[in-house]
Length: 225
Ligand SMILES: Cc1ncc(CO)c(N)n1
Image (tube, rainbow, N blue to C red; front, side, top):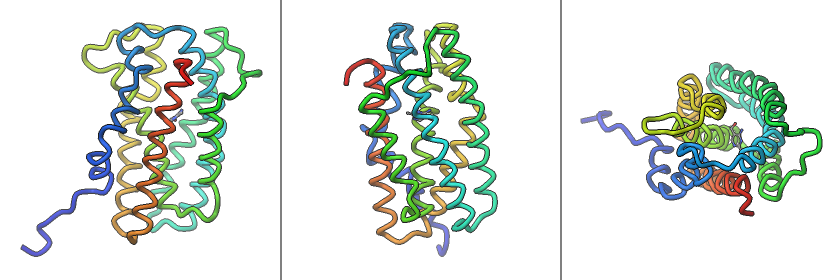
């Protein structure tokens, strides 16, 4: 039957193919320890300070993505979805400051650790004009999706997350953030569907690197690297 066969979206294929790595990023011992209540306070504080640095570097990346969307997108609504991400980041930065003062973490003299520096350098490489919109928006989806999946799991059935950490998990694990990640995934899939093979394989490689950086970031938070 003509047109009856619906292709499987690209990201779904990748998540099946790279299931192990995706699980390593979204079910990491760090977030699993939040979920089972055993997380070390020192690890949580380390994550908090390091992620504040990451989020600050994330802002110019998202700004560059907005610019690419404006220049290259075939759909006006992409800009609105990404702008929603900017609004969330604005909120996140205020939240990090409040949360840091609650835990007595000083944000003014945090030394970025190796895994963080490398991840931030990778973000910076994606800001280049040479990186296509399709690649950058796919990376953006992957970065947001790991946090969404990881922290939603900390709130899901059977979790023993402590009351004081629930707000952190809510920040990325709430349903609105889930829908926003779904919209990013739809954008990425739509673009990938129309892309030539070389862009598709480049995007796949970038997703793999994002997942690897996320694993390293969680491990760093546990003091492991
Ligand atoms: C390391 C990292 N990845 C993803 C997000 C999601 O915003 C974040 N805040 N930090």
